[in-house]
Length: 231
Length: 231
DNA sequence: CGGTAGATCTCGCCC
DNA sequence: GGGCGAGGTCTACCG
Image (tube, rainbow over all chains, first blue to last red; front, side, top):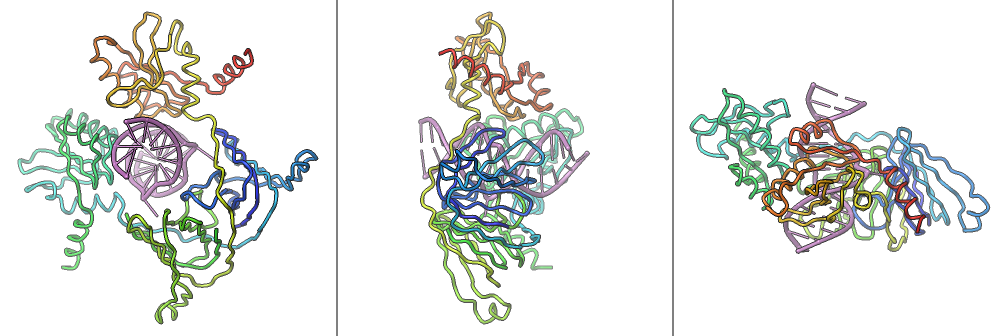
């Protein structure tokens, strides 16, 4: 990984055009040829960048560019598309190289998959007498997160989200439409379960007869921990 | 901006838990207290990070940590949530500080707004005799990208996307349902216009009587340039 | 490889 | 500040 601090101007040309005027920035060149242009603020997204795989070529400025104060011109060309990043370097304040090696990578806990596992284990969160049929119930248009039966043994399709948005309601609606064509399953009702449900999503869901349930992940994890400790 | 190259292990605790085992990485500390942990590959997304505003505190390792080889413990605490990033530093290979100042920021060209402006100007792209009613036609459930009239003076709602996905078809369907309740507008037909339309989205749209139109942005921009040159 | 859905999404707009 | 939609989204997963 090469780290360069320099005053520079940047141009991206590809799916769109994006330009950065002259300022001092960090240029990060990774081993796969990708380049990130970072300022001293904002979030983790760079101001401008080139995705891997890419090739960085450095060139001398022509006479006109040199007259403007450009000392070096970088051209970062993506190897799979015609996306290109052009960086005009003016003053270079820092330039260092570091051997990092391959990263062992990130492990996560607490994403939708965990929520799904917990809800499947604690299916009565949805109501007394509920039983699990199966997780990731496959249909022609994709997997239903959880299929269950209610106390009256009627089929219930559950769509699970961390944040309940209109998209999720549409998704569940499509599943319900399909499942209700199956005489062995029909009538199938829907439950939209999420840690947080947006007001507009709730209105749309309830308008379509879909029940909304907000989940408390911490409480569910707590129950999970207690149960785990029993074994 | 502070740049540190160090062997380290990282723990994020917040909306989820995410851990990184011991490896050599870049730690970028920005002026707003945010921290990015980058490896020498992947894309622009860091392996782990803390969003601003945040506060970095550095502490000496306790006896047990020191015995493991930890030389320094960073705690990066978000100032608005209880998200926290903990970094155990082992060997530090590089540590430098740089004054970057505020960045003037990025300017873009070629996003959906441009596409919408071009299509509004060249509304006959959709068919002979088409006329523009208005862009961003407001409804109770959001703005219709473009409202137009066809050659027979019937109302047409246009949903515009760079990439035509199922979501866009659902969105247009909701608008059409609403607009067709208005006797002054009904009957309203739909056009789904995008630079690229996914097969499944096309099938869904046509099944609902929505016409699909793929747009050539470069050609439209070319016409725009030619027209601009006439003035 | 393409298609779908999630994300500690981020970012920008509008109310 | 919240809600909503777009993104050069990126990323994992599944066919």
